[in-house]
Image (cartoon, rainbow, N blue to C red; front, side, top):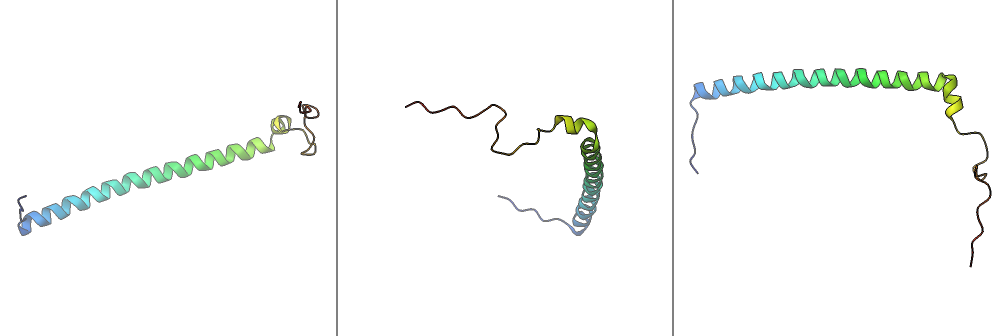
Length: 79
């Protein structure tokens, strides 16, 4: 393996390019974060609107005790 040494000018140029790359990635991440927040807010609003709608009450399971099955009593076991 050969080892190359950078000159001071090359090191400064490399540092500048890395700083530009990090800034570019930071902008992308910030935009994705803003998009994710917008999507999360829209989904939250949708869920809240659904919960307040009359259709949500129709889609919900009927109120009954947990032990009461909508399919009748459990079948007896055959031995």
